Length: 301
Image (cartoon, rainbow, N blue to C red; front, side, top):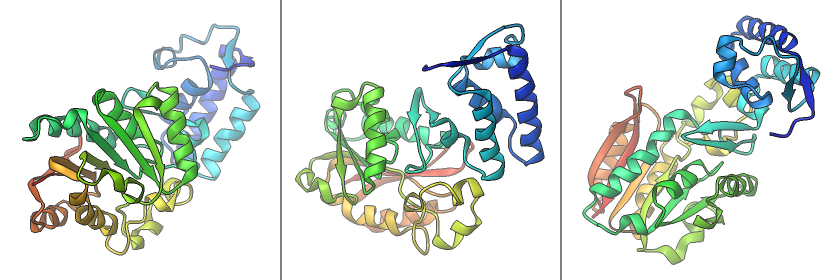
């Protein structure tokens, strides 16, 4: 942690109490204050919960308290997501760099990595774990890094149309020790991966799936700050998903895994689209930890 400023425990507690009350007044979750302090100050959740930092004369900070106040004012007034303010977000066991160039990885997406591993183990093809795994629309690189961790013998390929997003994904891979395990490509979906036709063990993706007409109804944190490119799924929200259903069979090996995240309520139609295709079998709709149908899984025939 790079530090160059400090504040007393009492002064920080005063700031924390002000920030939490301001959050409540703005209808923002006050627990975000402690999340931000864990990133800006050398304090852990336990110290914050017990207030054990109060008696300390100096607590190192990444920036002056006045600048921290300015950051929090942006959260309150501009509804900037706290993850963008801190520049990082926790995801699985990683700390990932994020910016407005990338979608903030959600906790509910974490399960997609576990489902990918389980699907590889349950496939009739025993060689998937050491093959090529593709993360289409990698954004921050969260899924690519997760795949690199669970498939140490495989090769991960991460694709995004945004050069800014790719730069962040590459930085995350390097910071977490997976840079040599992941190949990064600039382009749309499969277009940079022509040489992998018929050679892909698994395709994992969190594509845009929100119907265009619903974008204006999203929370201001999402609507005003996260990249539309990563959100807009077309008229019915299924434009990208349908494309991936139609194109993936050219790339997947027999028994290869097709796995995506989708919006609540899309499960039935996505399952039907997969079952109507002659190229898939073993179609499953899988829930997240809240029991919401969040993921669609199928195997290449």
